[in-house]
Amino acid sequence: MKYHVISNFRDKETFEVYTEGSIFETDKDKRVKELQHKGYLGEKIEVEIPDILKKTVSEIKHEITEEMDQEQLQELLQFEVDTENRKGVKEHIESLLKGDDNESSKA
Image 1 (tube, rainbow, N blue to C red):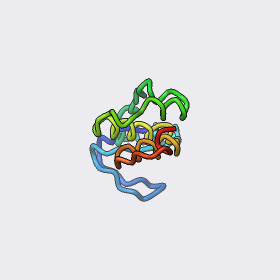
Image 2 (cartoon, rainbow, N blue to C red; image 1 turned 45 degrees about the vertical axis):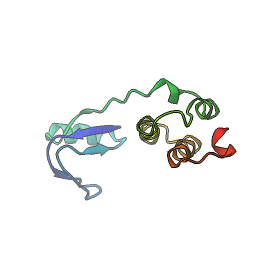
Image 3 (cartoon, rainbow, N blue to C red; image 1 turned 90 degrees about the vertical axis):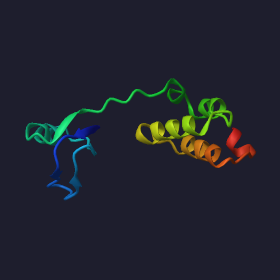
Image 4 (spheres, rainbow, N blue to C red; image 1 turned 180 degrees about the vertical axis):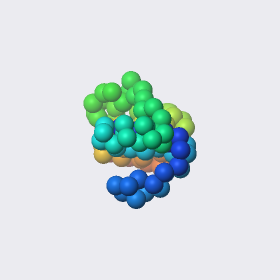
């Protein structure tokens, strides 16, 4: 889960420094509540996944094509990295961003 950092702090578990406006990521609910209580974290960041990324890898590869512009591809890649993080989807989008036009990117 990801949360907005609303006040600078140094994580006592990882010693990483978080600045206001950055993102804190953890799966530890107890830690989140502690940091929110102390005023360091805001609300959970809710990410709405585009419908195209809710499909199987093969369906995604069929629907995400070189006809999409670079901005759309970058946005889809970022959503994929932030959510499912599937290797096949990432590699496909990255190949389209590079302009690779081979058969392996058209599965």
